[in-house]
Image 1: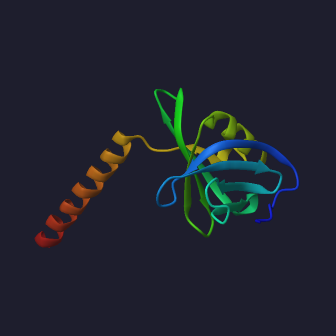
Image 2: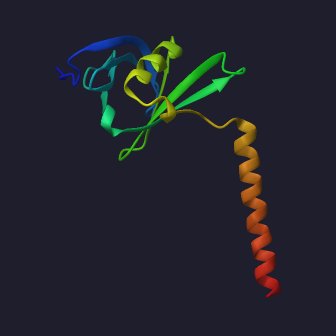
Length: 133
C-alpha cells in the first residue's frame, strides 16, 4: 500500500490523469501536497508536494464557465495533466495552498496559432535579411 504524504485531507474528488493513456482515479488535496491514486492499479500514483509546484494551469472554455482540464507544472519533473468531475472545487482547494497568482489560464487555440504564425514569419524574415547581407 502507498503511504500518503498528507496528514490532513481537504478534498477527495474523482479524477482522470492524462499521463499516457487516461487513468481513472481519485485526486486527494491535503496540507502537504497533491496526490492522484489510480482506481484499477494502486501502484499507479502521483504525489506532488506543494513546494514542488511551480504553476497550476487551467484550461478555460466558454468564458470561464467550463474547465475541461487543468495541469500542474512542477519545478523539476514537468507537467501533469488532470481533469475532474468538479474542477472548480479542486482548483479552489489548491488555491488554499498555492498563491492565487500562480494559478493561470492556458492559452486559447487562437493565441497559440497566432504565436506560431509570428514565429514562422519571424524565421522567414530572418532568412531573407541574412541572404541580403
